[in-house]
Amino acid sequence: SLPRVCEHIHVAIQAGDDAVLRRMRRGYTGAACIELVQRIKASVPGVAISTDVIVGFPGETDEQFQQSLDVVAACEFDKVHTACYSPRDGTVSASWEDDIPQEVKEERQQRLEALQEQIGTRRNEQLLHTVVEVLVEDTQSARRDIPQWRGRTRTGKLVYLPREEKDLRGHLVQTRIEKTSPWALQGVPT
Image (tube, helix red, strand yellow):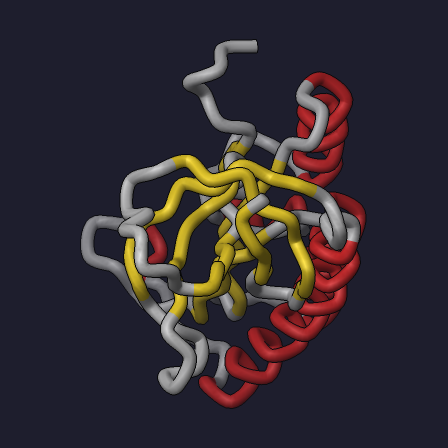
């Protein structure tokens, strides 16, 4: 309810399978992650939720990886940051055998990213023809031949606007969304 607090929450699930989560020393289950995301969405209208998922954690089976896909599908995150497991100094798993082949990790990462692309497409399409507030950050073009402003919505979604003579950097701009993709929105100031 505070106007200065944006409607974006990060819930780092890491994995969806309970056995993998226990090996990661996480104190929650896949079902608890789903329940938490459902409560957040019910409490904060229009919220965007992002997460982190590690694929190929030592010992992760195909069935356990499928549990991660199932949790991501159930939660319908706005953004999923994916990473292939790699040993990190200071973690318990650093001394374990990294037994998942790199090509398996990469294939799992691609499957997760493909699922998230479908979810992102659906979630962003809901914003088509709506007006959203955008904080203009800088000029950066998705296409180098078309100068554009780049900014973020209150939910952290990337938005491109046509570049005008007026410097919009640092301004809040009401923007009508005219095009969506899984990763970004395009709009025009209203």
